[in-house]
Image 1 (cartoon, rainbow, N blue to C red):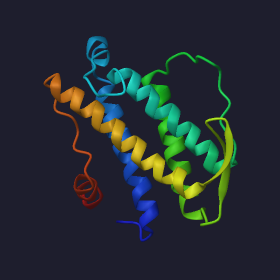
Image 2 (image 1 turned 30 degrees about the vertical axis):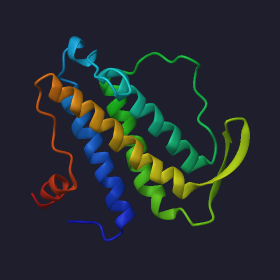
Image 3 (image 1 turned 135 degrees about the horizontal axis):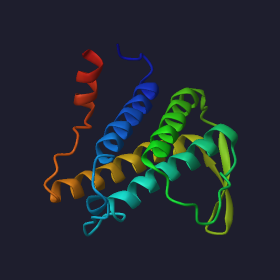
Image 4 (image 1 turned 45 degrees about the horizontal axis):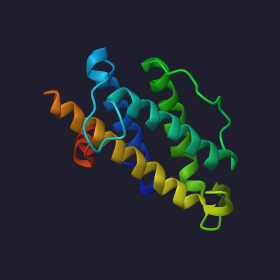
Length: 162
């Protein structure tokens, strides 16, 4: 069954796509996780960590209106920790996204200047950021000869219909 609210559908797809990719990447070897290609954020492993940490930050901004405080150089998360975090932030974003109103803003330090940024822009960034980096990981996987998961909306629709 498909939700009637398009914003909920977008964020449910985002969570589904993140989980599918991360679950497949959990089976990769250390050598494969270290692989990178020109134009990508970094290695597969680094990009996966980046996706999770960024989503944590976006979720904090949407749900609390504040920046997420974290240690300067946190240790890498395990796949179990990343999957748990993605489920938490993904479900949280599904809950919060439809609540965001046109005038809702968050104060962000933008290159040294405090700016009021609409929460709708942050929600847009959540989807764009994850999609871009998932594509980089999948391209790197393809270069390694590994078939990445199909994360298109069509595949999601099929999964919902199953």
